[in-house]
Image (cartoon, rainbow, N blue to C red; front, top):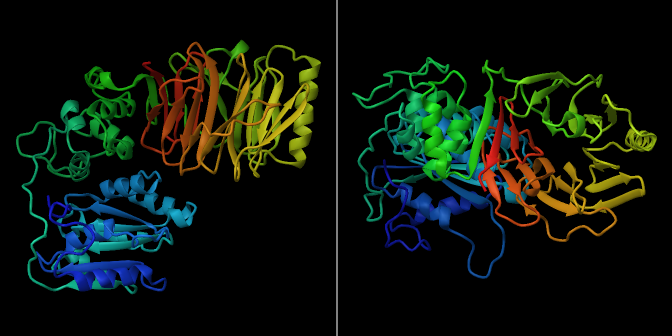
Length: 551
């Protein structure tokens, strides 16, 4: 596979000798707002194409200038499939994509802030495993407003010819002789045994992805196919490894120790997989910071998959040990925390989509619908009159001023709004805090020795607040991705806060001190929760996972 790394003699400040005109042309293209969004860098072998893109990736503003420029993301295509490229680009741009089509959709619908714009530098199209499919992906990405692309390939590449025939394409042709800093061809790396979990977890993940996508494998390796593989756990030819890899691929392709990759792969393994894989992967994941308690995926039968997850709740009081799992249709299923077995359904009549669940300590479940209005599902125990009056007051308020997030503890109901404020309705009155810039996406309340409220927003911050006091000035977490879900609970290990961001990252925080732990399941995370025992729940469109921290 060709290397995209210039030689050590190259200092990054000047383009490779002989490519100066091409460098000037690329910089002119970058600064021209009316230029085509796609630029092709072509030339004969040895003309310095890959080195030029490496220089462009590192080239910054002149000394003393502070102007912020769009991110430049270098992604080598040599040996790559379209799927592996989509995962690599999505990861670098802070979105989650299961397929190339998902990548285009995610970039087209995500907020295009100036800092969110990017220039993709794609090298070695001629050496890709799926050049035609990659050319189609490039064409679709070029239509996305927040992305510009530079694609490099040799002149005789058919896929490049197809791109060059497009109506809006800029071309930089490096028609010159070999230069001293051109990349050196590396020998092809052998493929791992795609049915061996240890080999798969230790190998180059992009190589594994390409092999699983194309069905290519070296002769004599057991369990591999000569052509594209059929879908399905028992039919994928690798005992379920391929199915799990495709489910969690974007997370698996990140740089990480083999133990962490084994944990992600274990969490993605369906119940139809070869039963020998689970203990092997668990042993390989021994060094990871998490232990998988259970996982339920689309197609699982024992017990059955509970359906797509949009909201999660971990109940206490009369519902102790019960999970509340809501889907897109508004149905809320009750599951046993121990094994995700069914415990019935929540009896409610809320029309439309549910955006938040808040189980109260007395067994009552408060629900926020997609219009921002409050609904109450009473438990078997009778509620004190003062709690009924409090809930009615909050419901009347939200009928006039819709909420965007919801939580509840003993004598309080906490609501977030679209303007960034958090409101705590309690028996002693109303307390408010302007915690976020933009919409509050999630709130949680913890009834500990010092009760506190935790909130997350579209601004990417997570903040702590005790009603009646000023909010903690420093955020508990702050990332350049919106918070999509958040939950907190008092556990035997102290209060724990779990946060999920729009880029697929889940983090477990300990407000009273302790290590921060992270996990990426692969698909977009829709909801997270912490149980009273300290377990972490992660819900996606096709999976529900339960993890426990090892420390």
